[in-house]
Image 1: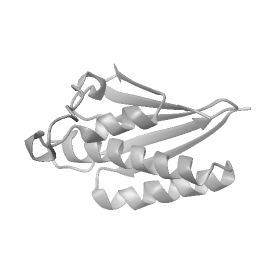
Image 2: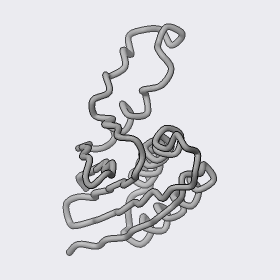
Image 3: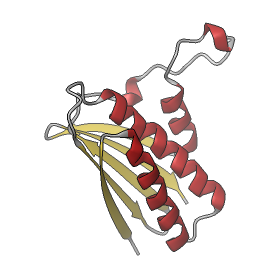
Image 4: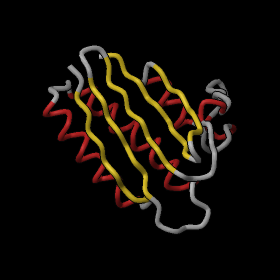
Length: 137
């Protein structure tokens, strides 16, 4: 059986707690273990923060649409935005062997997302960035 929930937020940092609240609500409804819930919140905060901070250079208000779909085997999250095209899957993995002070700033969020989720994919569809995050459950 498949269940689907959607959420639309605007590109403002103060929308992140709204998103976290929605994840908590779904986790309770779908009976997710606490570690999965915490990981999903971390992943979504990272992914949506990137959209909020970098996708819209005009600083106007824009919608970010998030679809969360669950079936017996997996959880699929799609993040849609009409921001500038950006494929995070092409970002080079950070060199974790370097001391922290020698590493470039940024890039760890996408790396973290790819470590937590089982599959991360990106498409540009009808002028929209679509980031799809899949977790086997």
